[in-house]
Image (cartoon, rainbow, N blue to C red):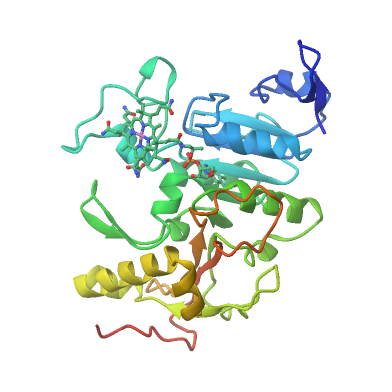
Amino acid sequence: MTGSSDARGATGPSVAPLPMTPEEVHARGWDAVDIVFVTGDAYVDHPSFAMAILGRLLEAEGYRVAILSQPDWHSCAPWRRFGRPRLCFAISAGNMDSMLNHYTASRKMRNDDAYSPGGQIGRRPDRATLAYCQRAREAYSGVPIVAGGVEASLRRLAHYDYWSDKVRRSIILDAKADVLVFGMGERPLLQIAKILASGGTVGELRKLRGVAYRLGAKEPLPDGILADGTRVETLILPSFEEVVSDKRAFSEMTRLAHREITLGPAARARLAASRLVTRAGVEARPVSRARGGCDQSTGPAADGGGTGPGFRPALYAPAPSCLWQPAYSGL
Ligand code: B12
């Protein structure tokens, strides 16, 4: 733990900002960091910002967190600034989608960035989640990469991308992330840190609620039993190829996904399916995702629990080669 006395004599977690340089890491007496939190925003130590609220939460649980804020993405050097993280990279494009952050509705470059020092625009790349994950992978292959935040969350399924005027496939198929946490990240990120700290593999992260991942073409669909022992059923969504060529399939995918994500308690009891799977790719790369995220009525689950009724699993996955067929192919 990093507990200490502050200037007023109060005890508790350190009030110093989380370290942003190797010098600040050493000043804390750390020989390494557990998690490098990469963000497209400036580091603002306020709960409106994910790197602060999640970083502080991890810090309070004893993890050593460093912040890599608005790194120069043209090489992986900044990702090596703190050395090899012991547990993982935690990556977010920032408080908002990087394309929305950069461009107006008429696709012109914005004059300012509300999340950068001095409102300076251009301090993060377009599609920052992709770029940041790529650099993390280059910097240290084998270090788990966890993507999260608004950009990753809202692009976790096939989605319409206004900037390219296309339906794009799940970001998890293109990002070099091992798992994507969607929605509020407090509970899943703590669970992830705990699993990795106890020697668990990235494969074990797939059994958490609120996590989406890519299932390899030759991997079978998972058994439907979550880390907390809950048995879930699988709902197969229309494939990427279907939704990209058929607007009705796109609508149905959206309807089903939102139904699963926003279920109230009554509907939840009535409908058993809780894991969403969608296939994608002529290259036989399926995507799977779990349904869920955080029940807004219960709030973020930084309570150490794992069985809250509002959390649903989300997996992505399958491949053309697998036996599973889309259940909603002919809508
Ligand atoms: C406050 C706010 C603002 C303030 C920001 C000031 C400030 N100091 O915070 C102001 C007014 C400036 C603002 C401006 C804009 N905003 Co605004 N804003 C918000 C708002 C209401 C809250 C943001 C916030 O505090 N979030 C709290 C943080 C902690 O949440 P978070 O980043 O999502 O992080 C959580 C999860 O995503 C996850 N997570 C995040 N990162 C990571 C990383 C990992 C590894 C993991 C595992 C999880 C994880 O865990 C976190 C904690 O649960 C959001 C709506 C909302 N409810 O989020 C809109 C929102 C971010 N804004 C939005 C928009 C569109 C804008 C504007 C473009 C509006 C406009 N047309 O001008 C401008 C930006 C202009 C510019 N030049 O940049 C949209 C962005 C949509 C998108 N797809 O990205 C949002 C989502 C509202 C909406 N629903 O449309 N905004």
